[in-house]
Image 1 (cartoon, rainbow, N blue to C red):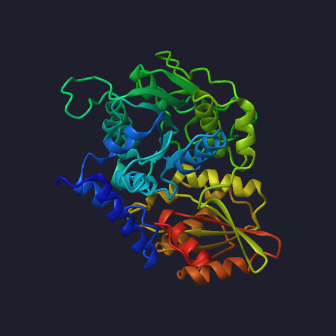
Image 2 (cartoon, one colour; image 1 turned 90 degrees about the vertical axis):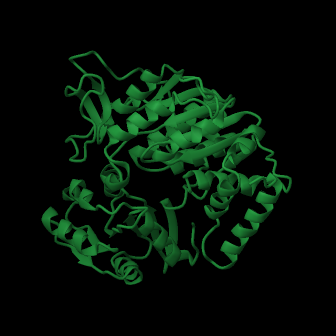
Image 3 (tube, one colour; image 1 turned 135 degrees about the vertical axis):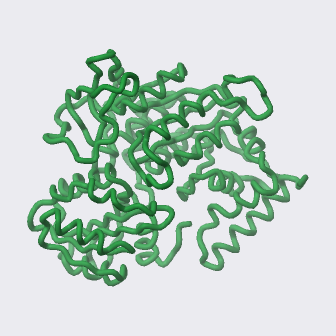
Length: 441
């Protein structure tokens, strides 16, 4: 097809509006899907309009929060941003975000594109970055949706290849498709291995605080072996899962020094400290001052479903998206530190969640202290209830119907207290729909 980009933009903006009008979603994916069908290389046109370049945020956990932090830092610094704010992080979602920001002529007036990217979509996105300044944030790699992604080593291999991919039509193997700078998590051995193998300029972020070390390693530890020689890594201390201060006593592969940072997270949870440090590194790379970064993040509001807060009947409800073992353990650790008295756990097994729910047996529900009341719900409520039984938790109630589960869980907190909801991805969207009456995607 040879359809002018201006026509594609106008038609797909109409598709987006129709989707919202019919309450079918926010129109965050279909416009991009149709645009890619009409013009497969449309993203080349959009990224070529960006005056300064693209910032890509990739990783299993923390993409949405980190990219939103980066967006706020840059906008507060006077930059114009294109961002897939809905969290639609496949190629169609990124194209949809560009369509939404484009003028009627199909042009984008922006300095940066800030895009969170699905793990499998990174190799698909990079070829469209030819000639661009690209900053890639590598947050972490955990087991997630094993039926879709496979083990973390498979994703790591795809990322390594993606960093060496040639641009479309180039024909020169190994030529970099863009001027790439990496911002990588030093506490994740797989991430460090990917960054160092790429030989690309890299800034490492991490946490240098033994006070955060776990007293006991979590069951959900994904990558405790050296990516270079395959031998077991030595950990001076673990922050969560396989993230920590590590080294290989056999081949010498070790955690690199991290960029000094005093940034404190505006949100509770150690995982949000990682998100904050990553965003701060990006801010520094693109010319923001320490003072402006601190000021921007001090007023940060969390993304939907990521510690997002609601009030119902005088009681607070706080959502903690928990979609894999490492993320669920991090959420549990946080709500326990926040002195939770009641939690609602919602487990679905739809396509966005992954069909295989056996991972719940790697979540450390045994760490929930006595006295915390739990309500379990979702498509796989009985699997979750069985896991509760084997964890030794006695104060739990199962309720298959989600609206009734929310009410039941709210009955277990007093006015002024907070109900903490830990849902998988599609379950989080359902909870939000019940509480707000609106779809996100």
